[in-house]
Length: 231
Length: 236
Image 1 (tube, each protein chain N blue to C red):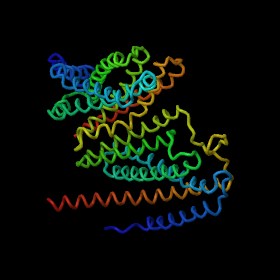
Image 2: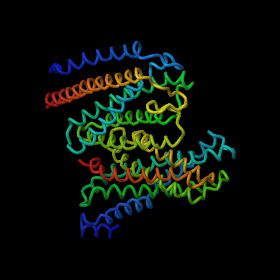
Image 3: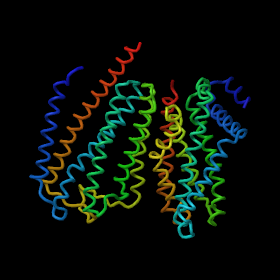
């Protein structure tokens, strides 16, 4: 087994350090929000995890398209890695959002566009994993999952728009200070903390993505070795 | 049938519409002889309406609000039944391989299957509407509603045909289709339910138009997308 490349090892360390720094900034640097107090602290990681979920979603869609064009197993591995990361991080974002929503909106869950879209996206990803499970031939699995990722990537924005036609209570945090429940004015320290959290989680995303792709390649190698052994 | 086969032998590949036509007629003729699919779908839809009747206690005031939802839930569930059946028939009897061997563009197979699935779905809907109207004393013969049903069915079948041809080639088969299909047709269900209830409550057209537009956009985008990727789904 090949050891982790040096760059990856360094990235591991950097991710951990950045995460600790982000945690420190959230609790020590960013000021307390007036009405929501400590509850508002979860906002920084809520946004950051949703951002990573979004990155994974885009990466999966791109990998799916390239996989269809190039017919290369490599892109299938990348696509699966992106989908899994996106699945987990949207789940974290949904949970973090629920914890925030309970004291702010007074309910864990509302059928609000972003929440509902995130939940539907989770459903699509679970369906994606079930689809992969049902196919043995790796080539067909790559094709079908790429097609499904593409269908999902097109339908999710439309889903968001269609739910948006209903009224929304989710705050649009940046650029407005409307009086709708839950939105608040961000001080520059808060903004800085938010962007730092976004940056940190982007690095963490790259690190996890790399690890997951590597895992996929190793799994493929094991698969090949097994086949050679059988023949 | 025979005429169609002959004509596609004479001028292969070029006769795109002829190929679509042949597939649609093949499906309709097979259905006319066996009546397996339509009878199953029809009985199933009636059962769903029956279940809703007891689940929701459809008194007149509930009906006014719930009718569009019930209709679309019924169509969505019955639709998966039809999509599964029409694709697994092709797979089981080796028909799909035969179709793939034919010297026509693969997308002709997609459009052929989509059109025949659409016809089955529209037939079921055409039976459900009067039955529902009689059972619940609600007039559903509204031209707007019929347009919505047509647009909604087109989008549903466009995605459904693509996904069902994927689902039948997996180990889990029939079980998989609703799981794959429902999360991606949610825009259709939202828009169709909203537009239907708009028409049934007699709202202004301007209020309903956004949903109609959404349906049209969805139909166009997904028909085009499915047309582009269908090759990858049937490739061996």
